[in-house]
Image 1 (spheres, one colour):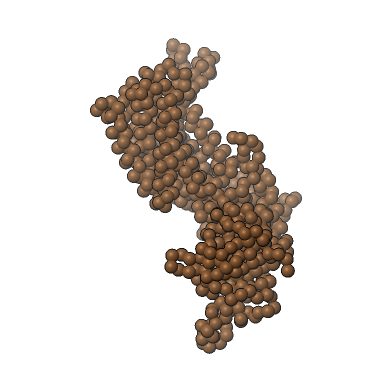
Image 2 (tube, each protein chain N blue to C red; image 1 turned 180 degrees about the vertical axis):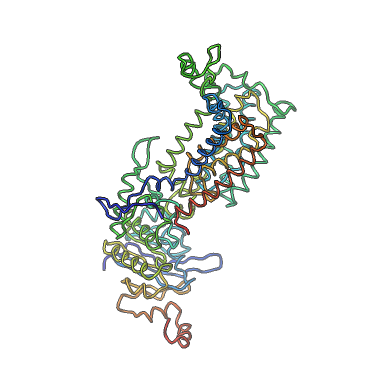
Length: 370
Length: 259
């Protein structure tokens, strides 16, 4: 089954040497990696070369990061054997909580972020408690939350604004806040200016770099991917996530606190949504109840393209990272080509279908099913 | 005979108006293989669930090394040295042998937020303890799904022994296996017993029980018919006790003693 050579080793003649290709073939990220290669080649051939300039790359990585932060949470939860369809509505609801704390209650950014995160923790814990206590599929429980939170976001925005469907003036209130650089704008802008001054990167005639810096959501996205990967592969909690999703009963019998693991995962997913809400609300300066619309599907699709099995117990954060970049590339990339933007959803659905078929084959290979 | 590690006294278990166990007594001493036999529905599974802390008895007492004990959950039973290898093995096919081996008790190193899995040690110990049970793993990160049923049993047993099991409960370990795989598992039971572990071997196969058992207890409809030592009882007698006597006699007429 595996590509191996019969070369015996010193310690144990039965230890077969496995080629790195065979090792790679077993990684959950393989599908996403080949997908990314395919999409890159596709746009390299069809798109305006500006797409792959520094500013072009940052331009598609920014929406990729917004989907990606959600996808990292979604992928951990999916490895843990559960779903959360409410993350998109969670973005809207958290955006409202954040915006209302800043504008209506006139609180500083620090307090608003804290209140938003606590709300996310409460909602994530609620999702988890309903799923765990009733034993109902998380699909249906979080589908209910999808509508409830979306509706509450609409009700809340109208309450906070006295009847309007848009909550404005959020960015203005916190524009001087010391915490702002961590949640809005571009990071490393000084470094980018320095690079432009020394003609390393492209600049406008006035001397400003074409890429003003790394969008802050991209920094968060990279950091969260690194942390999630480390947790999954190198910590005890990571092993518990795999175990809880692989077979909850077996994990419980082996002493894994499955309920606690799943509760944490629901909370992490909700907090990822809240983070996206804070970042995008600060970016837009306002919020409305349509924020995060259908993001739950995009996050789950990115996680699945990244190798997460719908049945749980298998997947990776790096895969979700790559899946999200594919997402951003296709979404923005089409505007650089002559292809009509309307093809976006066709492309996306096709990618999802191919990814699922591919993952199924990988799972058979790993588990030795025939 | 040495003192029992675990002694179960007059255990009863009721589920609503169903009496699953009506006063079962059972014990296991170090280094023996005590077979618990019974037909489907005899109460074997309920009994071992009580012994391994999954369920609590409605009446009766459990003594661990002479001390009366109650297990609130499987973890407490595990900490007391009672390990269970379930029929479905508590094995996760998508995960590697090493990850399965350490599941729930992962070795860590480092401090605070940097506490991480000690992957090197985990893999080394896994490979070593599998080898001591007679299985050479090709790779420590091989998924359990690629192993045979007998090999999976061995991981589960090796895992329990490594974590200091004094009593090892094996729930029908041979029922789903072929002849050669069964022989391997029975040989593993023998190895474990020789290390001084008390083995509780649950089965409905009299021949498998006779192959390794030191003592035999038969459960029938939630009751025991007492415990017999090796040499005191024949396979036919065990078979009859399991079936509750008369039914099998009737059967035997038509099958000419082939059961």
